[in-house]
Length: 170
Image 1 (cartoon, helix red, strand yellow):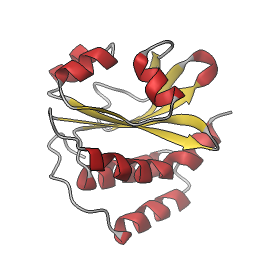
Image 2 (tube, one colour; image 1 turned 90 degrees about the vertical axis):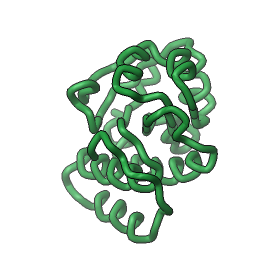
Image 3 (spheres, one colour; image 1 turned 90 degrees about the horizontal axis):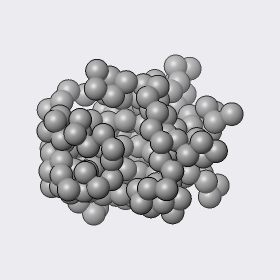
Image 4 (cartoon, rainbow, N blue to C red; image 1 turned 45 degrees about the vertical axis):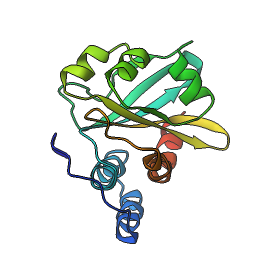
């Protein structure tokens, strides 16, 4: 997906079919992440799209996919122990929606990089299975972009990451 994301539109059965087909591909996690990048970009909208695996024992998240690898490469890790964001998203398994630059500053140590990219809003979706947070699907866009109804759509789309994050969580 390019940095200039199009406006949002309704999720369709065709989108769900594309995601189901991507799960059948042997090229994981790349194939499902690329397809989620495209579908979430069209349906919700984003400029930055990342997928993070949660390593609970280390209180870290590890980036397994990014649509902007020059700024946020796969393999990057972030410590998340004892932060309000970690408690909300990783612990309580609730969506975090930040609407403006102050929300970005208060939640992320790398806020300067995020803001420098022109990103002022965020939607962090926990990927949860069997009562356990496996990771997050993260969408960032211009300030004020995300709305409450995007959270439900995000939760539905993020569920397609469950098999990938379960398989990689050894």
